Length: 97
Image 1 (spheres, rainbow, N blue to C red):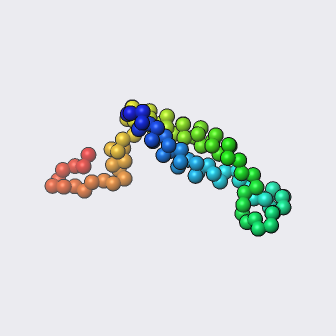
Image 2: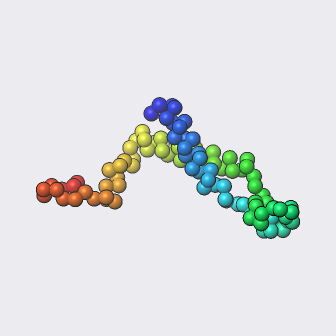
Image 3: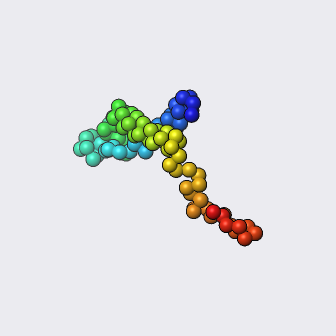
């Protein structure tokens, strides 16, 4: 696998993980016991920490990328691993295995 492919796949994984990590640990101003600024939405986060989100996203994405790359190199899980999900029909008496 080329290094450019590794970077592209890592960035795709990173962006998927960032949206999964965003809501973790977020509390509203009401949950934190703080007062709202006039015009502020009640659901606005009161403890948004972008550095924490970037750190967790980078750590999780790196772990997922390492597992993906190791699977690519060693072939632990292949498309044939999922053949049981979509079994092929019997054609002219031949087995799909």
